[in-house]
Image (cartoon, rainbow over the protein chains, first blue to last red):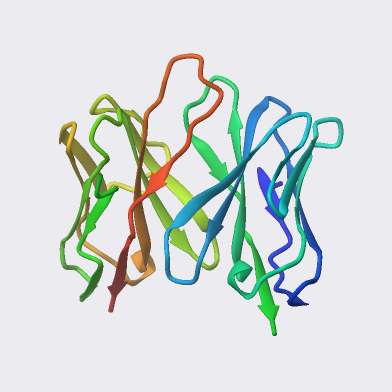
Length: 110
Length: 117
């Protein structure tokens, strides 16, 4: 079983749509969670951290469900510039390294 | 700050040749990571340094791969001899790791795209 699993997509949505991605993790000792964004042929960049109580940053909302061991990312009012791959990232307690999912590709069309 | 600097950005080489990838982390960061990204396997951690000391190299594929960090501002990843299956994008990332910190924000370099023919 992979440590961090994501639906690879692609998710094809029109501008203005709301889209949600889920990610599951296998290690119950996972302590910290993040979403990174990676544009085509570019490096990953931190989009947002995911807090236990859920958090929002503009059009982006992240949720954590520890009982079911999944994380979600909701994007409202999609823009063309949101087209990218979204990487789910997990940090296990006691470790300094991060484990990345393979990513979910989002394509926003006019 | 110029961010994490990697070189070369692109390298095409023939099987059997030695490849050296270079990384300059962000000044003040105490942790450095080498990742490899392929379509099939995604982002895989190869090795992690803290304060210039290798902490976890369990992701290094085999003896053909080696990494060094002689000082806080420079690291290399070497592949010798290279093979076609080593073709991938190699990312270097750095972070400021604090004891007992839950967060560990990585800043990635632009990557080195390696093609081994």
